Structures are given as structure tokens and as C-alpha cells.
Image 1: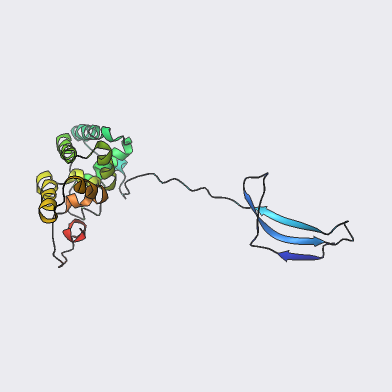
Image 2 (image 1 turned 90 degrees about the vertical axis):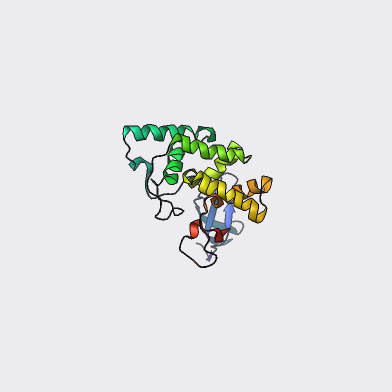
Length: 211
């Protein structure tokens, strides 16, 4: 007959036989009258170990790309634009999501309510990509920018991208390697198009005040 039972909720027993720990429920002492030597009897139950789930990049959105309906001609333009992204080794789903967020088919807080749906044109997509390459960004680096800021493909090349790069150089002396590091860290600066100067006009996602 067991003499005493001691609750022991904080002890962990790790067995060399099993590759998972056990939670000790209780420790009981068997009196020497029953056994030659006093013996501790340990009651334990296996504990389930949850393995961490690896995080995979994805463009979070409420609208599914699969729900987009295009005409035959629009689908050809979309597929051609997807082809322009082949250098970045995205999956087909990722390519669709990048285009969807850039051209208003997938909701993006960056655009707020101002972005109307527009079927991407391969020439416009290539123009933006070639401009980014002209800033001495490699395809690997451009791929990182597209993951962080897919909306860059939908920004106006002359009025926003080129203008903002010139402004960074003129106002802050940011160019060359410093510019590259900035774009990798905060690519949204390419899409800024307002400056409230501290007097908020509710366009914070595209305002230079964030810089």
C-alpha cells in the first residue's frame, strides 16, 4: 500500500528511450515493508510537443486571386505580365498576388480607396522593372522589394518612382549604395506622392511624413 503521494507538477522527465518529455503527475513512496528498499514510483504522462510551423512569404489579402474574372484579351495581358516576373522565381500564385495588389484586384491598404482595377500591361511592368535595375539593384534584390512592396509595379514611373528618387538625392543626398539600402529597407518610399507637412490629410500610407 502506498504511504504518501506528493504532487509534482513542475518536474520534467526526459527519457533516452523516447524523444519527447513527460510531465510527472505524482511521486509515490512504497514503504520498505513491501519492498527491500524504499522506492519512488513516478507516474507520468507524455506531453505533446508542437513543432514550429515555418512561415512562408505570401501577400495577405481578403480577395482571392482565383476570384478575378478576365476576358480572353485581358487574360493574355495578365499572363504576359506574369511572364515578366519569371526572373524572380516566384510561384504562379505569388506572381498573381503581386499583380493583383499592384493593379487593384487585391485590396491593399497602401492604395486606400484610390486604386481602380487595371489590367496590367507587360510593357508597363517591364518599364518599372528596368528602372529598378537601372538603380543597380540585382534581380534578387528586386525580388525582395516586390515581396515587401508589390504595389511598386502599379506606381507611376515618371510622376512617382523617378521623381521620388530625384527628390531623395536632392533633399537628403541619398544616392548610390545608400539609396539601394534604403529601397531594400523601405521600398514604399518609391510610391510616396503627398507631403502633409504635419497637417494630416488622411493619406498616411503615401505621405513623406513617414520617411
